[in-house]
Length: 344
Image (cartoon, rainbow, N blue to C red):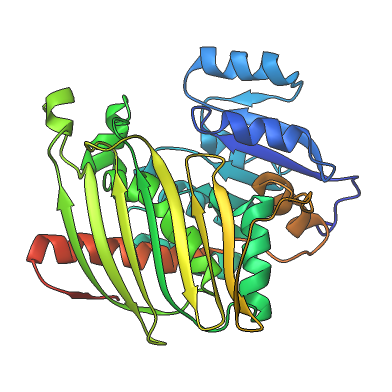
């Protein structure tokens, strides 16, 4: 429980209600959350979320006023990418725990400042990598962590759309987003796969980016609509990544593949996906699909609240977000320079 607060749970604010609507809904159903507050510049958005979720707490137009409320213990930052770092750091300095939307920041330097601010404030900093929070993902993670797959030496991941460029310019202008398809959807499968691999230390990246379809939608489009990368890790493992908002393909595909010395695993399909595990048992190839009911997995907001109230581990700490940010920045650097980039 939060020190000095005699309550049944914490009080959480959500800053930004475009991406943040889902945060509000999840917090409202958490047994560890006593009250939810909302903040957004647009009155209509505030009123719609308040009505939908039946909130009775004060609402804010200015996040600084929300952070000044000492009753609020934690906040979700669900703003455009360029605002993640300054608002997160302000919240940590105000003594709030923070769940920040992905990508963690626009640059590695910003991500480092966020991690340092959390350490100095002694507050939780979590990144909303929501692809981790499924029973199937936790099943594969348990296999990997238990050694059932052996040493994972190779991985692949992708999120490819036939046509799926966001319609808001904040997503496809570098000044507000920091990048395009890579930093919007590629970040999800990159994080998921690195997490399943046990977060080895990335050391070098080769990357390519393309911009073939976005400018037809809007002349101000100045980010990647397609990106590819090859990542090398300090332990000798490697990972290939592809992310695309628009391609001439059959349809949307989201997935990963792990290759280990004792077994492999993959996820293929779209949002639901199919998970399969490949092993050799007694000299026989055995392919399995988890089909029995798997243990339920609490969503990111529930786990964030539990980590504050009950002291359970932070499931997606800022340090993980920093490692992902390092890879993203190195991909863009490699693509711009036409050669391998060291991760720093």
